[in-house]
Image 1 (cartoon, rainbow, N blue to C red):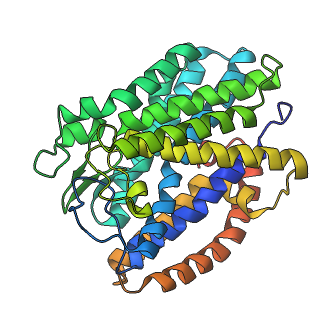
Image 2 (image 1 turned 30 degrees about the vertical axis):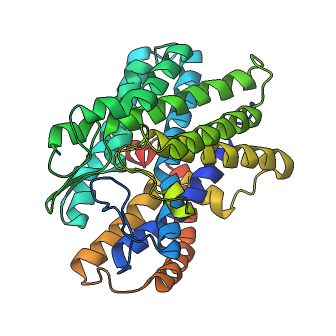
Length: 372
C-alpha cells in the first residue's frame, strides 16, 4: 500500500459516495416529495419522516464528510511528498491557496448561476478549509487532532452563542463561519469552520498513511480506521440516546430508526459527524482490505468516478439544477422515477468520466485540468 502513488480504495470510497450524491441531487431537483429536514431551523417537531424518502435522503449524508475528509487526506499525501522532495514551502503554500480559492469560488459563481440563487455549499467549505491548511499543515499531528476534536465537542456551544437553531436568529456572518442561513435569494448551508475540523482529521489520516508506507508505524490504516470508526459509532449512539447536547437542537422524538438517524447536517452536529465519519471509516477499512485482496481494476466504475470527482460533480450538478430551474422540470416526478433517472445519469456519466480521465492524463501540465 505504501509503495503505491495512488491508493485505489480512497478513490473507491469517493466514487461510492458520488453515486449516492447523484441520487440525492436528482431527488432535490426533480422529486416532488424530496425530504430535506436536516436542521433544527427547518424541521417542525412531529413532522412525518416517511421511510423510503427519509432513507434516500439519509444515505447521501455520507457524501460531504467523505469528500472533505478525503480532500484533506489527498492534500496531506501530496503536500508531504512535496516537502520530502525539498520543494520550496512558498510554492507549496501558493498551490494550496490557489487550489482552495478556485474550488471555493465555484459556489458563488458557476453553481449559483445555474441554481438561480447565491449559494455557498460544499465547494465553498472545501475550498476555504483547504486554504486554511496552508497554515495548519505546519502544526504537529497531536495539535491538529486536539483542534479538530475541540470543535467537534465544543462547536455546538460556540454556535449557540451566535445562532439559536432557528430562522429568526440567522445571520450571514455566523452562517459563513459556523451556522446556516437560508432565504429565497441566498443559501449558506456549509459553514467552513466545522468542515475544517473534518479536513484536519483527513489530513492527519493522510500523514498516518505515509508513516505506514515508510515503516514508521506497524498499525495498518485499515485497522486504525476500523477501531476509530466503531468508537465513533458507539459515541454517536451515546449522544443520540442522551438526546441533549451534541445534536445541534435536532433531537430524537422517539426510538424509531428514522429518529435515531435524523441528525443535524446544517450545521453539522457532533452526532452527525460521529455517525458519518464512523460509517466512512468502517467502509473505507473494508475497501482497503479488499484492495489488498483483489488489486485494482483501472476502469472500475468506483475508481473512474473517484478519480474524476470534481468534473463529475460539476457536470451532473449543473445539469440537474439548470434543467430544474430553467427547463421547468423542478419537482416534476416521484421517488421511484428519481431512482430510474439516477441510474440513467450514472450510465451516461461513466463513459464521459472515462474519457475525461484519459484526456487529463494526456495534459499533465494544464493548471485548469489539475484543479478539475
